[in-house]
Image (tube, rainbow, N blue to C red; front, side):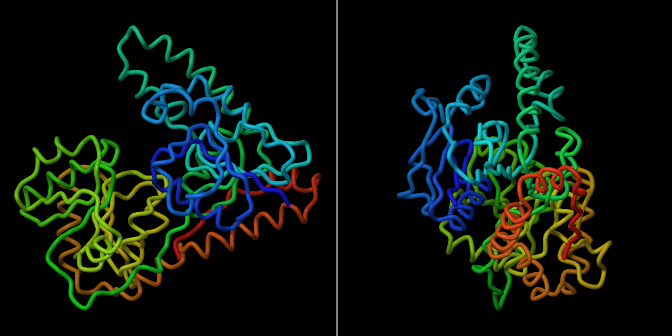
Length: 388
């Protein structure tokens, strides 16, 4: 079976790239395609793999300004020749699922989210622009939204990275999907003999992560907080921080493991489609204090809903008072958390689980045959996944 894996771009190394690393491991002879490739950003798993890119890769600074190139995505996507493959697995946004596959090929799309600025966040993005730019953005977004929806109808089967995203796929694409959570390497997790008096945050320092809420709250309450990560918000966040908040930037894997293992709890303030970092934290037996929307509702067992075996505390407003209350509640029950249970819970999201579920889905598609697969995909109920 000839397999092609299509990814929008290799310009950073985040959760989307971890999915590609895992898929490439499942299908080691697969050919890889992308719109934009920056070899400096490739993970160790991608080093040495041949990746065919589109003409966008030849545009200077394409990796930095990739969002501005979105009107060219339909043309660039159609330039990727994935004919002759039996299975095409695309991942990411509209830049991949629009590839033109052979008539008898199966096209599976792993969706992290329908593109936010084309769909649910379109009004917000439109308002942010200068008035002179708004008409052009509206016209381009309208055309891209039509292309995005139409290309979704040509996909044989959707995979959603969470039940939260499965609902959004149903809303915007009118398609059902199978939920397969992203792969998380929980094998590195271990339980430390002793824990220190600090909270931990691991994230890119960008506005959407709401790290400012964590900085403000811990500064006002004089709680020690260690923040791992880099990003354009770093200098602004440092200016807001008290001495108890420490920014350590990027760290090695061994240093990160040590920080995870010795922290009191992991703080998470974003509304994520899935959220890999809270799962990584739980692999070290670390309780999670998280904003209770999005993917964390599937990965963190809150003390309210699971009082016997919780893995964290959720708060439901991105405000100082809401997070302060969550911290207070955590500290009142800190020693009742079962670190071994938290670690075992995280293992339900391990890379081995992802691999097994991908194999099962692909096998079922080819076993059903062309006609059956098409009808089954469109009638299959949207999968709801309860926390394990």
